[in-house]
Image: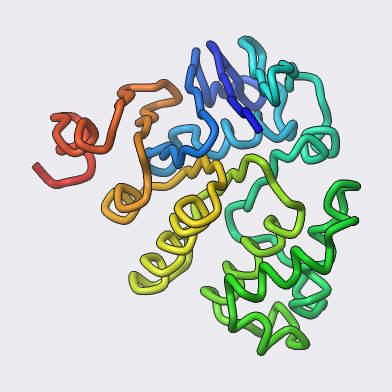
Length: 243
């Protein structure tokens, strides 16, 4: 399956507030791409544009699957999910009064995933063994790290072709941040899942990403061809490495 996401010159905002200005990025099959930036620089807005939750005021968003290009602008979230583009939202957004397994089953909503629901459920439990042990537990009673596992696993239940992960480190301890991001990296390394991850934790992100972009005030301030370029860039050093 050939996959490529192209964002070209996208601008977006909320009323008079401009959150993105002329943003261009691309993600190819099998990559883990990092979208780096501190809070308020437009990372989540871009993710919402990709999933149909925010409509850009300018630019193009194209998803190519097996040689067929699809214009994502104007499509609703359900249509985009049906194409296999699935997001793990910032803050997890679970149903706290449903069990772990009930939350996971809701992830298998799209038609292509319903046919393989049991297979995908077993995959989720193999990926996150603690969720099998706690499958009857109410999601709202779990720790932040365990809830993040449920959120990622719920996205996996939809059999995604492109996984968008928005700020997975929010609200987690340093140890849980490391474990969560490592698990996202494992999904790419072991299973070839294509990932675009928005994150502000530079040190953890570079452990799993192939390359990345830095968003500053809603614009792409730097694009790297590999992680070495990110680590050696002077702006990145000043922003993230305390240089």
